Length: 190
Image (cartoon, rainbow, N blue to C red; front, side):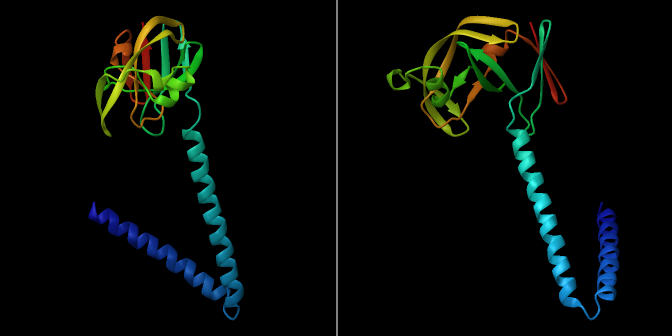
């Protein structure tokens, strides 16, 4: 492993020495012009890297792509390492992060309000342990939950009053499916 690193350093040093030698020979007596050219190419390089970073961020925030074929739903792992599913909850599409470590469907207060749930009027009687600590939860019923061709009614969910963006899809819902994860693909079948 250390020999690989040494070989890489030697290789990069040879390339830099070659480029440096060419630069000095080409712009001998015109170093001001050479410096301007180097700065221009540096700016182009930085712009390309920034563009790539923005493109990567935009790609990771795209709407989840899932395919429904017969009795199965297929979804790809996203760049952040998680699987996301879009379920239609009471007629409204909601993106859920699949969380096999969570027991329940958990809605952040922003998602609950988007669904028309009055979060101020809920009785937060439960508690849940999260990565951010213990939060209070209130149990609610979702009248219809649809994933592809599968529809469930009167599904239990919890709204948290803690800081949580989005929604989690836990095992209470996922247990109704046969789940198979193969590399970067998850297949749910019923």
